[in-house]
Amino acid sequence: MTGRAAAERIAQLQALAQAQRLAAQLAIFEAREQLAPLKSAAGVVGAAVHAFSPGGVAGSAIGRLARFGVGHPWLSSTAAGLLWRALRRRPLAVLAAVAAAGAAWWLLRPSAAAGQRQEPPA
Image (cartoon, rainbow, N blue to C red; front, side):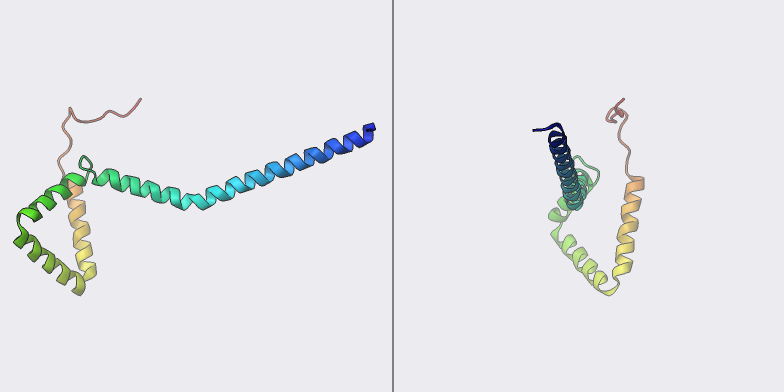
């Protein structure tokens, strides 16, 4: 190979490598873009699982409420019927009341004891 032919071949190989690198970067970008909704959905599910776990924020309250409902079926069935009837007639009012009750529970819940608090990592 002459010097000029070798230089042209090297330039062609470098251009091919650059094109392949750009194609790979574009494929990675498209894959990340397509997986972004799945990643965010997995984050939401993970946060919900953490919140509703027995040691989580809402898990203990839901567990107590479920145990109360199982222990008093006549009361829970009556309350469920009334809630269903109110939800059919005035859904926004029921949802606003549920949201207000949830906010009140969140604001008025007992704080963790000083010994049970976790210190933030340094």
